[in-house]
Image (cartoon, rainbow, N blue to C red; front, top):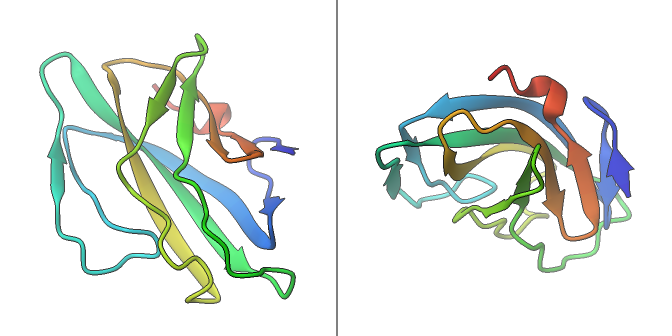
Length: 127
């Protein structure tokens, strides 16, 4: 399943909506939904973090399950991983999370994928 820019995709009863993309050199590596993890990440020379923010809404169709970490795909098809995990996705009815991906500086972002759900975020990338 694929969501067009700004639209919501349903993944196993979780409604996932793209909110935005920010660029940063230093980021908090918070769990999703946000918890007590206080780790930080720092970009190396020539790199930056593309921080993709997503909102989640738990629907009645949601059954507690393990949700894979998102992966990011850039405009050239290169795939990047995040260290942020989706922990206990049904613990709150609605929440927002930011997923930092370490990418080469200036990388154009195309999409974020959570398992079988692909979310087009290219129009949110102001790079």
